[in-house]
Length: 167
Image (cartoon, rainbow, N blue to C red; front, side, top):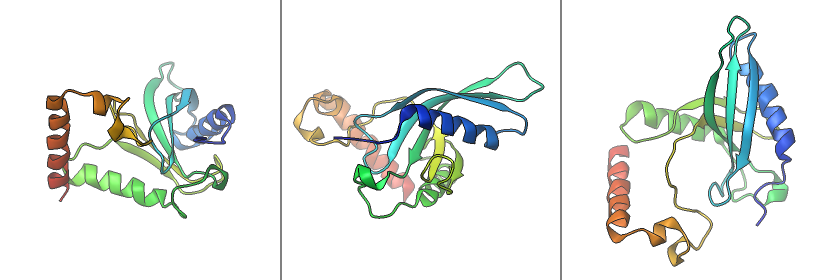
């Protein structure tokens, strides 16, 4: 299954150029360690990357582990006919602001396709295990299926708790 037809080097350069325009004026930006996911993010392209930026007055730069959710191109067989990434961005931001539901911090939403060829948003990366969305996750050969029954139950209970908190 082809996840993306985007050239990773070109995407890294485009993200770097875009990032330099959204961080503090006069800052330089660097995007490194760009990688796509292999088992998650079927509905949108999910790109993991590290970024550093600093302004001209500072020798120090802060490192950030980030995630870009990108609307897929038509040649990559999108799951949905249209993508509203601004709405996804707004929902994640509002859920984080108004509830105890664990969501990553969201940083920037780019509705214009010009910077990298499609609308996208950038959020912080949260470490952890995510069940794969490439089926068949219910039939084995993945961490969720292979987890101990107590761990599966803990995930189930936490999922129900998050849904209750969301509502």
